[in-house]
Image (cartoon, rainbow, N blue to C red):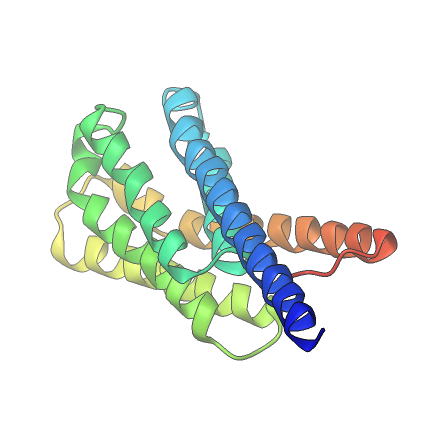
Length: 185
């Protein structure tokens, strides 16, 4: 009888771990699709940086919060590379792609490793990202004024806006799940 109970507990734990892995894979695939499709669809829309940047930052925060650092770092690299290889960037912006990738990675790492409440983590990681992107662009590249502007305060604004979206979505899911008796993993 004891062996049967321990076998049931082990099966439940295995099923729970499988569900967590499945959820992580599904959320990562959806997030990757959003992070890749959004820039491609809005590449030539006027003022697209604020919309695309906000959505991509929300995706990065979401995956870092819900799935983990490794998956989020994967997503941090892919959209910029696709934009680069598909020719979605103005030629003068190509040189800043590595800084954007490093900035996205800095956002994820800071957000994941800062031990504070969600708002502080979002604010600090957004600021770090904007500094990581802006300083090298300003100091080392002879960029056009447009590229220098794009890599300045809009990076901070879009990261903060993406973080606000994630706080709202996460709060909604926590309330919805607690009302239905589902626990967050």
